[in-house]
Length: 407
Length: 65
Image 1: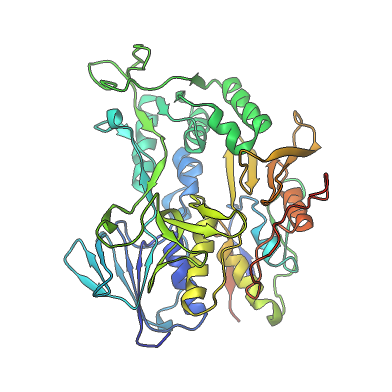
Image 2: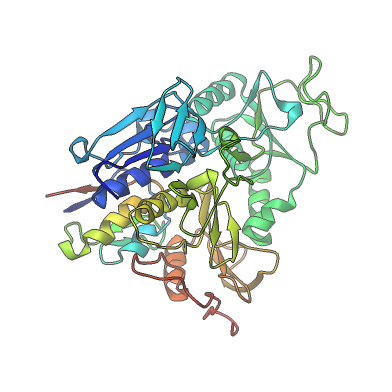
């Protein structure tokens, strides 16, 4: 890259700033613009459903250092001025204010936004993506001491646990409860559900809001059964969708995220990272969009390196965690339909256990329940570790698990 | 370079250990980070920077000398 090159990063959160920091660390001193619909400075989102929601943490504890110094080169922020278009012909990003930013390289790190079922859009229905959302939700829970959560995924369950520690009554509505076991395995899923029940959470499994008229009338949420719940604040924790609507007409291939190759590139001079990006993953041999915190920083950094010519393919194994009631549940890898539970360390009903899920040709997955240190050691044993910068694509999949049968 | 852990925000991902086991380890019970060498040799700079950048709770601060 040339010193007069300009990089425009759309998205001022973890993926975007990880890219900025890595560009500076690797010696790029040219102008970088950071465009954001929020305040263009990074903060941690995982605590929004946990310690920030309960009030244990204040806003200052969410903030993340940019790791960028003023004298390393110009970084121009565009807060509360979202990108409205990407012009690949003229190499410009258009902002809501009318500002046009020319780019040599554009990085789409625009993240995701809550996906709310049609019947739930409207006044009084909370979502949880931003700091502001969390502040509003916290106030509503404190005022009402009750919350109805639509969606029993990780956000919904984390908020449920937080509500219980706030002394609020909580109901969770989930139409497809099998989804949880698909993500963390049957044993961990059942233990989580059991724990929620024993903590007094009302779990309404196989229930959904009424498809029409869910919020009509003076009562609370109407379910598909016709039952009307008590009037109370409602949280729609029904998933997120990539923030790519503004890219319609850009000519980029958008399909549940910006389609990229294994280097994070979507088109000449155009890259994407984080929740908005769908990259080809050489180890899973398919495009993947990974909506986890760790991936945002990984892809942001990888885009920076590849923009500077590294040609380093994506080889990281996805990782996510959920903390509920002091339980630390972590998952390395993806449990797909052909993964089979292969080995168990610890007792499935004990304080701590790990399960390895093996696959013939894809990386194994590991579920760790209160077993974080052992998980790291096991990852090193199995080779499920970050690639060093000099690595090339592994030509054979990581499938030999020493804990179990031959690959 | 000095390696500092900010507060108690660590979520036990082990990323730092995987990036730089010479400097980071995890408490065997809690899984939270333990810095075993707060002033690592310059040969570990790249690995330590990667660990700080990778941390999904942003708990690692690096103080340049």
